[in-house]
Image (cartoon, rainbow, N blue to C red; front, side):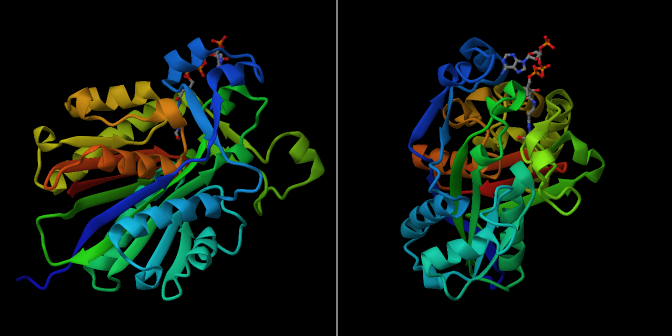
Length: 329
Ligand code: UT7
């Protein structure tokens, strides 16, 4: 048997808070309708964490499920990566809180900030750490409590986002038949203004006046993002399909970032992949940023991804950032 190490997704897990916020509920907060939100986005409802729950709590719940289905102990983990734009604190990292919650005392833990592409960035890093022989068991998590950073008076954004977390355990294997075949990540920092939480960092420290101006909340130029999202997700997905020596007809599941059903439909037609192979759950959760692909992967896995089926993950987010991965399950 080959001594080359490959990276295999051995388990997944996810967690969403219990509280459901429907489009009808939102129509009582801002000037919107269920009809507008449904036709423009495909979203019907989203989950909202309690005031006691932080991002690390959501992440920990998802991680515990992934660990238990991997039949691994937390102490087996070498590395924990949390992808989030809504960390518990600027420092320490949310991954350190998760490490403590899990008792993963042998792991290195850190966060990455790549917005909605974060889970795929984490997967790409996990793959590299495993293939180069550094680590054997990596826990990657996408987790967000976006409800804290949404401007609940802005109908352009507040209808879009939700809270949740998804996780995967990625382990080293010598068996090349079931593994991450290829991954690709990218960024374009010339578009930093399109989607941001402006206040709270070193460039714009929090003051009473910029909180009054809602600079501590998310702002977005949706139309511009829409076009770029379609272009970059299509290109990234094609890239990993080609790098894996596959063609679109080989793909059994596409698990895209869950931001807007119209974006998902545009990608599936441009990739020439049947829409019934494209996984959608944004009607239930809205856009959960780094958690979206992670939760969708877990739900698709439980719905029945079969061994040796080909899965493509693809995402796009603030930065701009984008990423994709091709997996033989
Ligand atoms: O996850 C990271 C990446 N993010 C994304 O991928 C988001 C990408 N963008 C989008 O999904 C879409 O651009 C949105 C869903 C955000 C907006 O859809 P749109 O078709 O681009 O609408 P729009 O922003 O052009 O707005 C159209 C109209 C405007 O009214 P006027 O100016 O035509 O009178 C908006 O004021 O819809 C109005 N509008 C709303 N009306 C009812 C905006 N939000 C709402 C709302 N309810 N919630």
